[in-house]
Structure formats: structure tokens, C-alpha cells
Image (cartoon, rainbow, N blue to C red):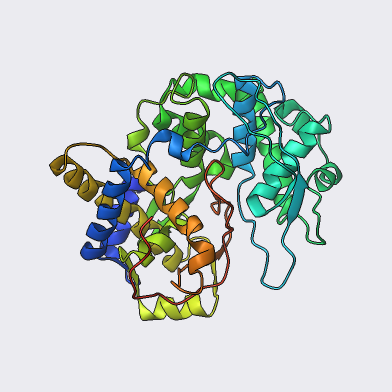
Length: 389
């Protein structure tokens, strides 16, 4: 019997949405969200600079662009699963940012010491290690680190330790070994082979680095989400401001990054609707395993809903004088939308989210907004109108 071919993220989203049982896409919610997106495009909220976030980059340390690319790859490789169970202190790191940039096209305002949690705590720990003399932008260096070394590098201000530290140790061993074996010991070798193509970069990364293979099975078909690999492409695109070697000309070929925050916004805006059975599981804070049908449906339907929103928003913009939008920009906007309204709306507007344990697909966004970790508690859906961004 011939092997069934893998469906890429866009095709996977369409396939999953067509057969989903617990998640559905609402046409009225798609149009409502498209209206929000079109208005955001016209007001400049989806311009590249609106999403550029310099504060997490290790600027002012004399790093070359190639070293910064190595830093992005390291961070995105470790960007998974920062969940701390309710009632336990969060993984936290306090570190001061740098005042000036060594790169003429990047600016980094002075950042006072502040305590960061979750993903940004991990970033702060890596930058702290850089300031302490650890060349963390060099894969040959972190290839030599022991688990004890990592325990020190990722030390927390609280009694909580870095979640899944042993798994992250394995990831560092994996990526450093593959970089040495196949790409000359640096992520620059990957970028060179990608030839300014985001699609090719995703293909190279998912084929070469097992920790980036974000796939599942649905109705007997293998489906790919490739969330962190696509995030990596987007981060490099923003790092290089659309110029070579990150001057990807095909960013529009990528989909939204199927995670947990964007589905929250999509459900809140009415583009996604969950069955009563799924809602009940979420209310009970059920922890899904990666690849569970419900989790796959949420992720796949989020991709397809975003594709429909992009199409509808483009139609609105064309009728109203121009402008364009991509799935990635919609993803950026909706992710930030959830984060910006989180403190105000967690209890008032009842955003949804889901808990997952399993493969390393549970990333958050390195270059945008404030950190809000996956696996927090659920609030039931709200029927009131959302605040306009």
C-alpha cells in the first residue's frame, strides 16, 4: 500500500475543518474578524514596525547579524511548554536589558531590571548568560554544556525550575550536533541553503531538526502544523527587516502559527465555536496530549479560519481603497489582541484556552508583545461584543 502523503499546514487546516466534530468555523464570526483586521490594516496596526519587538533581542553586545541569527534559532528551539500549574510560583528571571545597539538598523532603549516569567524568563536567562561570558550564540559552545550548566544558566528567582529542563538539554544536544554535521556549525548555513525562501527554510528545518517536526494524524491522514518552524522564519524576517539573508519573498505562503492564543481570539470574536462536550473538558482544565483529536481540531480549524479571514479582509480592503494582509500578519495581530486585552478581559470577557502536554509544539511568540504562557485556566465563552483594538 502506498504511503499517504503529508498535508502541509494550509491543506491540513482545510482538511481538518471539513471533518471536525467539536470545532466549527462561523461565517459571521469570520466576517466580523475580517472587519477588525481590515480596520487595523488601514490604521497601520499591521505594518512591519508595529510587530517589531527589540527588547528581547540581545542588542548592545557587539553581536554580528549571523550571531543574532544563531540566537534566534537557539531561542526558537527552546521555545516550548512554559506551563506552571496553578498555585505554584512561576519560573521567573530578573535581568537588566542593554541600552544601545551594535547594529545600525536596530535600536534598543534602556531597559530597567524587571522580572520576567515563562518564555521571556528563558530569554532573559540566555541573555544573562551572554552577559556573564557564556557565548550562547555559538552552537559549538552550548554543545559542551552539561545539564548542571543548564541548571545554572536557567536558574529562577523563585523555587520553580525551568520546566522540562532535561528535554531542553536534549534539544541543545540535537540542534548543535546537526548544525555541526550538516551546516558548518552555524545556523547561517541553514539560511544560505534557504536562498531567501521562507518555505524552503521551513522545509529544511523540519526535515533536518526532529524537534521542529510538529505533525499529527487526523482521520488517517498525516497533517503538519510546523508552528515553531514558521515562527522561526517570521522572527528571522523581522530580524533582518525583510533583507537578505532573511529577505524572504514568500512569507505569504506561510500560515498562521497554530497555537493556543490565536484560537482564544478567534473563539472570542466568534470565528470559532466549540461543542458543548469540548467546552466541558476545557472548563474542567483537562490536559490534552499532543495529537488528541480535540487539540488537532482546534489547531487545524484555527488555520482554516484565518485563511478565510484573510480572504474576506482582502475583499474589504479592495473595496475600500487598497491594502493587503497575510495570514502571518493576522496571526500577529490576533496574538497581540489576546495579550493586550488579557488583564482586562480574563474574567470579564472569558477568553478560551486549552492545556496540552506532549511534543514541543507549544511555543509562544518571541518578538511580539508581552508573555502570556500556555496552559492557563479556562473561562467559559462570552456573548458580549469584544473591545475593538
